Each structure stands twice: as C-alpha cells, then as structure tokens.
Length: 128
Image 1: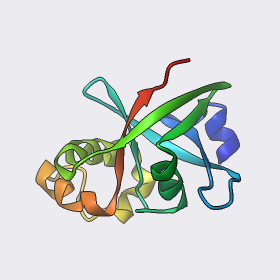
Image 2 (image 1 turned 90 degrees about the horizontal axis):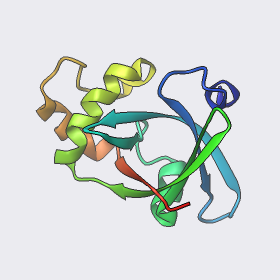
Image 3 (image 1 turned 60 degrees about the vertical axis):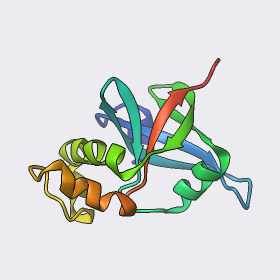
Image 4 (image 1 turned 135 degrees about the vertical axis):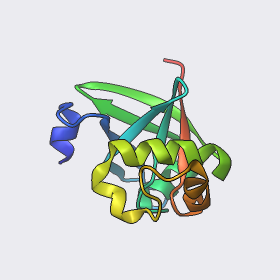
C-alpha cells in the first residue's frame, strides 16, 4: 500500500514520514490528506497511534507523493476546528468510515463530538 501511495496511485493519499520519538527510527505510513478551506489537514482515523505520538513530539512531518517530498509543521486543532475536517475526511476516505460513529451525511456537530477520538492536525509547509 505504501508503494502505491508514494506513486500517487491513490487519490488524496501520501506517505507520512515521522521519526520514532523513542527509537529514532524512520517510520512511514500511508495517510489521507484533506483539503478544506484552502488549507491542508492530517487526520488520524484510528486514534492516537504511533505516528500521532511521533508527530506530536517532533512538531513536524514529511509527506511524499510522486517523488515529491515536503516537510510540514503541524498544529493539533480543537474539536470545533476538527469537526468540519473530519466530516470531509469520511467522504474521501471510505475505507476508514467504520472507525467513526458519525455517518457522512450527519451534521458537523456529530463530528465535533468525535474529535477526541480522531486527532486532526493543520499542516503548514516549512521554509525550504
């Protein structure tokens, strides 16, 4: 899956690279990026998994797609800010819908209520 994601074969998907905050080892995971309100968002559909802890500790991540690698500073957002992003996320990442209580057509308030279970990060490109 990671190879297909890196090649750009899966829409909205990138390879996320983090460094293990305990081991220092490089970790790669396929992720789906959400574009909402002219900004980029990183969603953790499975909760606070290892890459989330690594990203929080480092304060930045790298995303790769079609041989283009970019580094981003991350900022975890509040539930109110996360709600609309999560709502958009379930529309484009259908494979993870079963991990959400809210359905794609539910009001945004249902997604705000779920935000504690699905961390959302705003991505800001770092200077080259």
